[in-house]
Amino acid sequence: MVILHGPLYSPSVIPASRKRQHPSAGQQPPDDATAHSSSKKRKLAHPWCPPPQFWDGLSKIFLTTNALRELSRRNTQRQGRRAENPQPPIAPRRSRRLRARRISAERGASLQRVDQVLGQYSSPRLKRLKRFATHGGPDLGGLRGFRSLFTPDLEMNSTSLSSLGRRKRGPPSPEKSGVKPNTTTTRSTGPYSRNFQQHLIDHGVYPDRYRYPDCRVPPRPANLEDIRHALRQPRPSLSPSQISEDRFEDFQQADADASKETKVTTDVIPLIEGNVGDRRCVTRQTPFTNLDDLTDGTLVAASPDLCYGARPEQLDRRVREALAGQVVPSTQADLPVAPNYFVEVKGPDGSAGVAHRQITYDMALGERGQTALLAVGEPHPVYDQRAHTLGYTYQNGTARIYAMHMTDPSTAGSQPEYVMTQVDSYSLTGNTRSFCEGIRACRNGRDWAKRQRDKAIVQANERAAAQGIHLCSRRDALPLLSEESAVETEEPAGQATMTNHGSNVPSTYDSDTSVDELSTDFRRGKRLKGREKVRRCVKRYQPPLGS
Image 1: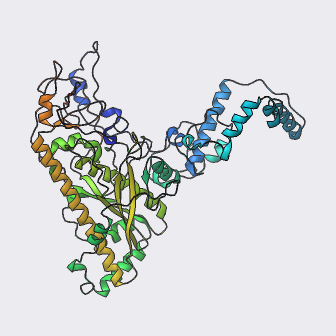
Image 2: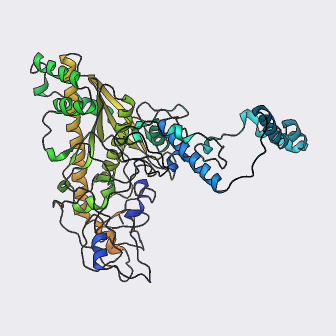
Image 3: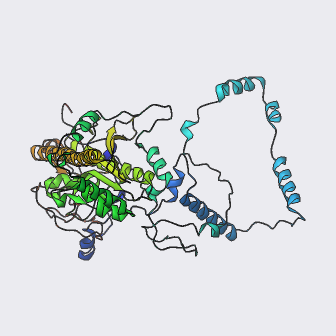
């Protein structure tokens, strides 16, 4: 029995919308209109701003605009509850000083001094307490990020926070508090907040130069030197003898004239990328709304400025459907799949920290997809400690190239970790030599990522064809089941076997606004449209001998 196990296919990773919804005994089958509408796809519900559970799960909260806004929202909600259940009025005092003294006296009456508490302990209990407090007491690291059962009554004037500006790109606030933001063009929160990076770290996605709390350094990719060697490979069109001084000055002028991020993307990046080859393998600023959540579902969808992937028809359709949540970023079926080369751009006034957080998020999603492809047909996920995803950030003439790889879970039952490592950096506006080296490295990195992607796709397609992989949707996994194992598995009565259809067939176009296809009606021998096709659920699993 060849089934993929591990964190990539655990229930915490698979959203509820992907699970098979079995009709109850008394439930009537839907009519034709309902069945037709439910057979379509829908985009996953990525939040446009951090929900309350995002803040509750952070081990450290930075005092950002959105953190203050969340505090204001909670204070407003607390005030509303108090208005519904008013407390008995307190008799007015003549001055604030008298009121403060009264409150202090009331609190002090209910408190005891340390010597009073210790005086109530017996001698054996005092010895145990002394031994318990040795060397500063116990390690409370396990309580990091644990939500307190008692929330201090920190009240703030919500009207003073309503005027805090938001960045562009994002829908208006859904809160119906009666206070409208000052602008309607807001930027989605996410990477623009330092709390975003803390959230990634708390979930095992580590940026470059990260250190564990005990000062240990995450392992670097095993193929880091191979990547650096590949980036240094010569390209005849980019040798210093072929690059004229005028061409270098044109690049310098384009970079100097690009005062905004959009100008850098349209005027400077094409000079770096050059001939991209197949333009169907590249997409710009496409939200990854079809991918499964990388952490706990509280992050906004990634939207890289530029990313490279493969044509959908390159990947076996059965594998593409089974791993849609890992390798198919968008519900628009003609966009690239399994992207593993990303570019994030910032203008002169942009934040380098934001670009760093964005490329970390993008590359973690890309590396997860490459690992899923390499694990097709394997009994467990493949963590070879090698990087399969590259990307670079560009700002003010400097390109920084990074690699991303996955490592084994540190403890049993935990999630795998993602580690980003800087490969090299280049100043493209310094001189002609550094200009040639930087562009050569960016283009060689793109070619290297394509070789890794094509290798993973070919391997997944070969295993799918050789083993006769079927689709199987289960509540505890999203496995790829080999045909030999399917024969040995005992099926409950009434379950139908889904045939394998041909691969390398371009999929039809699906609108971004299509709805989710999870039909509760199952008809034998009938194919439904969409990513969630008829998936046979093997409830009784008998592993073959030797597995």
